[in-house]
Length: 465
Image (cartoon, rainbow, N blue to C red; front, side, top):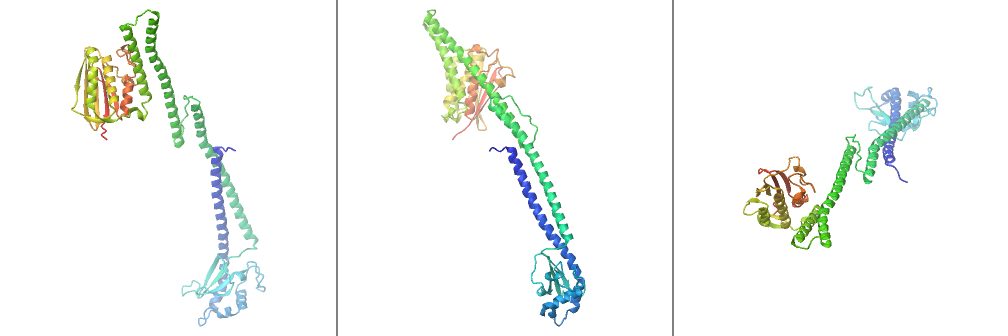
């Protein structure tokens, strides 16, 4: 049988309360019983003033310890009856007429606490009265002691009534405490379970694929934190779902363009509209290369979070890597009417994937060539600072608005106007650069260039081992 969490919490709190209250009630009952017995003993021992005085007068300094009372048990009983009248036996004629059994509980002790006469047993609860020449024992040590044990039971109706009344009050108080504890346990269980139920409903909603629902955060404790985390998770899933839909839509749209070009060229060749000459084949090759680059970029972005994405780390001279990339791109830049200025140190060695870093430089130079008006200029700098290698690529106008800069690394994003699809970009270049740089443990950023265009800067950690 499945037990609800509410029942479990209620039973846990209630059972703990029952255990605590029961233990306290038992201890209080025991303490009450012993305390009451001690109280009665103190009242009883106070009746022995006359007996104690007579014992002090009968004490012989030459023969301490009342040997005359010790020699014969009947002498002690007779002495007690003569000088003490127990309740219920005012005449002292019958020793057995003693409802409180004083005769069976009273013991005469010497100054060392050894028994002289009277009861032989000693109970755990007792009272002792010193026997002194003076009433306050200031004139010397006690001559002996009167030791009175607590009775095992009492026939006193009033005493029994008092004890039963106290036990009844204690039981009633314990019952009230148990009921209050049960009510408190129920309220606490509900207080805890209400937000948990809301979290359960929210989790079921998320599991069904609906990420729009949020749970009201009306608590400041750990459950409130859990609700906040749930809402943050729902927000993240909603954004991820939206990004996935946009990713699929943009990917299919970008793949459709080169495929449509290839299809049109092939159908034109099949229909005889166009001939397989150099121009036609060049257009088909360009469409195929664009499709290949797009597929490669998609592959890089898809696996950008996997550790094997950038696995070929070797000690490389960053200056040499960038110099090779510039040498390959220089004809393209000259064709686009752009000059490139390089400011490099003699060498800057770090651990990186040479192929991937070359791809970053190539993408950034292609972007600069694609989106910079001729005649223009590109400035490429490399420097070292605080354990990081810095690479900066700046170009001349046009640039992008400041409010658009943070979105340049979004996949398939293009700043419309001066930087458009008509120039051949897929909108994945900077996203690919960001994925590669972050896989190296670095960072990449964009800003407005001092030259009037765009400034893209990335850093790589100088890992030498």
